[in-house]
Amino acid sequence: MWVKALDMILEKMKSSGFNFSQVRALSGAGQQHGSVYWKKGSADVLKNASCELPLHQTLKDCFSISDSPIWMDSSTASQCSSLEKAVGGAQHLANITGSRAYERFTGNQIAKIYSQNPEVYMQTERISLVSSFAASLFLGAYAAIDYSDGSGMNLLKIREKEWSKSCLDACAPGLAEKLGCPVPSHSVLGPISPYYIKRYGFSPDCKIVAFTGDNPASLAGMRLQEGDITISLGTSDTLFLWIQEPTPALEGHILCNPVESQAYMALLCFKNGSLMRERIRDDCASGSWDEFSKALTSTVAGNNGNLGFYFDVMEITPEAVGIHRFNRDNQKVSDFPKEVEIRALIEGQFMAKRIHAEKLGYRVMPQTRILATGGASHNKKILQVLSDVFNAPVYTMDTANSACLGSAYRAIHGLVAETGVSLADVVKLAPESRLAVTPTVGAEEDCISLSIQFCSVGFRGFHLNDGSFYKLQSHPELYRPLLKRYAELEQKVIYNPTSSCLAK
Image (tube, rainbow, N blue to C red; front, side, top):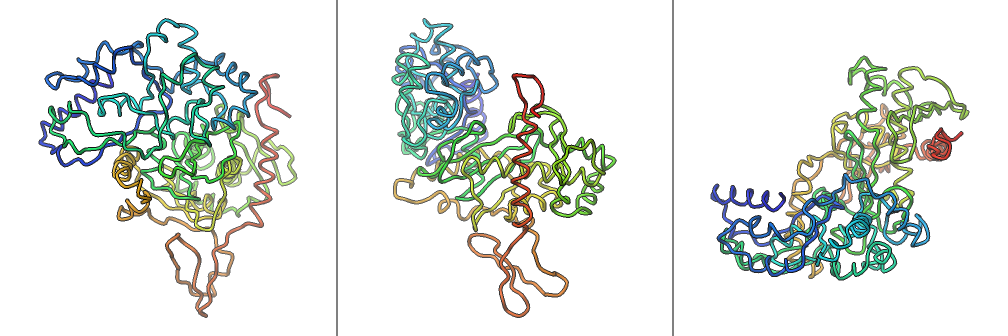
């Protein structure tokens, strides 16, 4: 299906008159964790593909498994348990690979295939990720797995950038040979296959840059830099973080950074996102976002110490469910006034994001920017709370097809990466994100005239009418103790599977 889809796209582009000869470099992205199993002898078939035939016809008998396991698969719980046990526990596995064992991760999927169909595994000469599979089609040879996508497998040592022997051995025999050696994400894998030169008119000089996962490609597309954080406020809320010194935990994921080989990225997913916000809007603001925003601004930052946890469905980060409200004395209460409920929801969601981001090694820096996307990013009152909680300016950007855009950025970056040119230098002329809000200023705004100062690292503060400079500052004395309280109370609401009830 994937190969046929590629055939169809390229044929449509050819019919439309697209000039393939102008393409200097090509990269791409694939859904993370999925895997493709090449049957023995497939390398020769791929290398010698006839330009007279669509590629899907040539490769139809090249796969030892016809249906690829993908990220939606959750059938490998026993393999996850075995992997964690083999390496000394969940935290130790996270320290090695960036994540504890997850059912969708590729290593556990491979282990399941080996245990249930050992003959199929033995017939497989190469295992690709979806990303390296797609790169292989353009390369006409098996493409290496890149560091960034490879760190979503529970197999790669994220610091040493090599496969973990203990993890490989726990999953299946001879696995290192079937995976091949991983490579830096900016690597030029080679020239495009002659198949595409003859069939579509690509230039022989067109280079194939290592493909990566969709999430790493999105980080490139959004042009994150050190200290930046992207928050996608959608049905689920997702965080992308640029991290220098990671501290892997039992939640979230640490991946090798796709654009800076010495850095890392982290992913955190929160299931109770926009649907939770919409439910509270309906209950407390008559279904109106305008009324919701008015109620939010009618309450003070910090909500007079009232904190809430809102999980209509079992949350991922943390593992908790239900609605839990606490007053300023940490006493659990049954309800809040409507305006307090609204602020408790929004502040709680953003405090949780900062707390769990910092657990993974993220730190707010002077140049930190928050890039907000998704439906709620259009609501400036919500973004104001986000800015105050993180004590950083919030920018908005149009990130439609950010993985595709990131792949294009990475392709051109791959041509110059070995000379030390950064991705930021390559895309410096691309459209900038837009400043939406800044942290609430701790000064009497009605008695001074202000002019905003910007610099190369973003919003910094204000010039006052007397010529002095007021450095940006929000509520560090307010939100820091609230963050500590929130983290402590969170432990009271985490789901306890041994008793099937909420921990007291």
